[in-house]
Length: 322
Image (tube, rainbow, N blue to C red):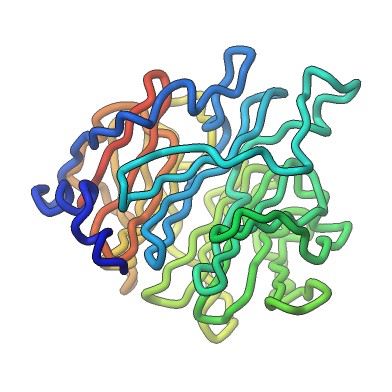
């Protein structure tokens, strides 16, 4: 990690926190205008995760509002500044086309990062296109298209596994897992299943401490699966509640994320509760932590010992030190 990151406002704030606490992070450049998707919407709608790049000391989030604008935003912790890169060349304004679904999308879990190569991958609503963003030079390109069957998963997740050097796509239609190795020209079905999960709004989380990808959940399902570093799939402990990226109930978990120190899974609900699933095995259990307000997106800060949470209305950033 860059020395400038270890000396940053972010690192200094984390160092003052006690275990199990939340603390608001002053972020003057993180504003409602930055999150504005127009027409009264914001870019955190129907999303739950962002990305952290410890090599470059940067956080990323991509998302969009309902039938409104999409946007990629980034945080450079070395200078404590949030900003939005120029719109991608494939970006378009939903209000200017006959079919606004062609120009809009939510984030869901459809973004992931290959830190080693500096490539951010994302997939928009109901699309077989794999977009690639170079986090160093800001260039956009496309990767191999998803097969038609998994592309029919309207709202699901992408995860990159550094342990296996593969990009994973959670196929909620066939209840399977597809993978793509960097440089390959086509996706392959790595784990055929079927693995029980919901047909919509499926989740994923990569745990580098285990080299494992957790996946599943989705509408009407609490089934969670673990893809091990050796490629085997086993059932993970069932969470006590369902997950939804825009829950109607404050008790429903919105966020699935990872404790960057232990590798435990963390589940966060708007009602103020944080649950933990131990990486070493065992059932989900509620922690003593109390969520300070409605939080939308989580970013595990690998190497820094905390999770960064993003919130809207009003725009705020919060840190949680597990």
